[in-house]
Figure 1 (cartoon, rainbow, N blue to C red):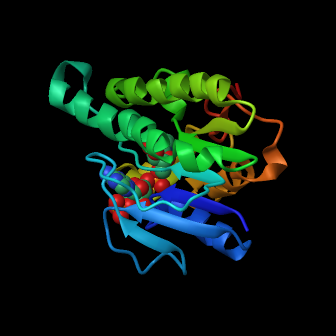
Figure 2 (figure 1 turned 30 degrees about the horizontal axis):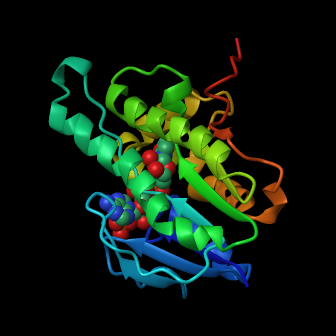
Figure 3 (figure 1 turned 120 degrees about the vertical axis):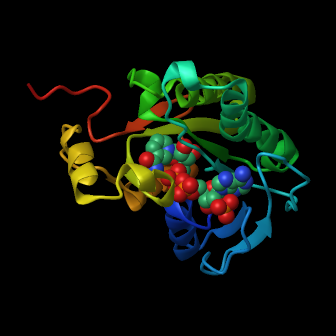
Length: 229
Ligand SMILES: NC(=O)c1ccc[n+]([C@@H]2O[C@H](COP(=O)([O-])OP(=O)(O)OC[C@H]3O[C@@H](n4cnc5c(N)ncnc54)[C@H](OP(=O)(O)O)[C@@H]3O)[C@@H](O)[C@H]2O)c1
């Protein structure tokens, strides 16, 4: 049986993913800041990726998914050093440190997969996104570097979602007007659902994607590449 560790799993995209993996018979370990009864049978441990401590890891891991993220939207002139470092630490450095911790266990798997999260705001310039675009840009660099360094036994890919209906995005979609305006900005005229993104993460963690590594996969309703005029 495969074993996959999700950093997250208590809500949002990573909870949908934990549910999907559990249902498909994968041993699912989750780790996040809150004690979780939400994770549908997954083994959960308390872990803060912004101040990482030693994870309780099995001997062999076949996949890890790093889901913590933030959205600090501010005009560039108002971004403090602390804003930028905090966002970098959680989104990028935390991912690198978790992968370092998990490397010995990943190396024991015949075919391991690492899944990271970027954002549409790296490929597409969006106002007020400088801090998160810098942090997630680092994730895209990490994805390609590690895909090269850890091949052929460990694949590394990232998902770059656009706005998705999760607790993280709540402030951006907390009224019908905001939700509609956000949907209208996407060629597919909708924002993402957490399970849309979880389905892609499940594919990337599985052997179904065994010929894919070093990719940033855009799940963004067409926002990054498509113009409808
Ligand atoms: N939702 C969007 O619109 C959107 C758009 C672009 C990119 N993304 C990216 O997609 C990924 C998943 O987003 P989401 O919307 O599902 O986020 P979310 O609803 O905030 O869920 C994040 C998960 O990570 C855990 N987490 C957060 N901070 C953590 C920390 N310091 N240490 C350990 N665990 C932590 C949370 O659990 P606890 O609260 O229990 O710690 C939760 O289970 C993120 O990397 C995000 O940047 C999301």
